[in-house]
Amino acid sequence: MPVPLRLPLTEEERARLQQARDHHAKPYVRERAAAILRVAAGQSARAVARSGCLKPRRVETVSGWVSAFRQRGIAGLLVAAGRGRKPAPPPSAPRSRLRSQRPRGLGRGVASLAPPV
Image (cartoon, rainbow, N blue to C red; front, side, top):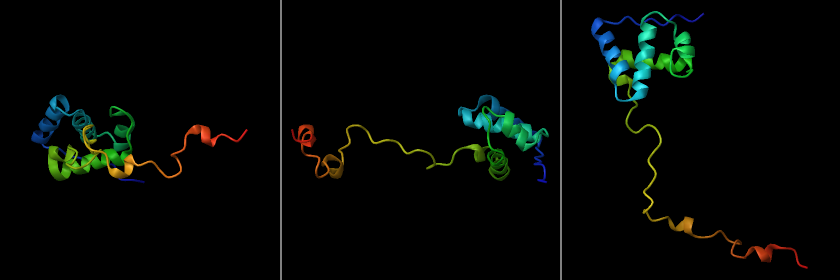
């Protein structure tokens, strides 16, 4: 049986988490702070993952948030730079030469692909 996740908080840590939960600019940080406060209040990570977040999460996800908070504080709740989807190139960027060429064999029109009459 897994050991319950415990997170004792100092008053300063609790105040910082409450501030982040209520006022942080990034919604995902608010969600993570709220989940960590619930774990610190004694709820199991499983219960928080199932119904204590904006949407159901995996237990490993909530445990990872707690671990990141233990290691780095509020900064551990932020998504690291370089993670996530990369921005698309602007529409005015030149296309690569390979994309502008048609594949071989597709230069004929549709009429030439019809069976002979």
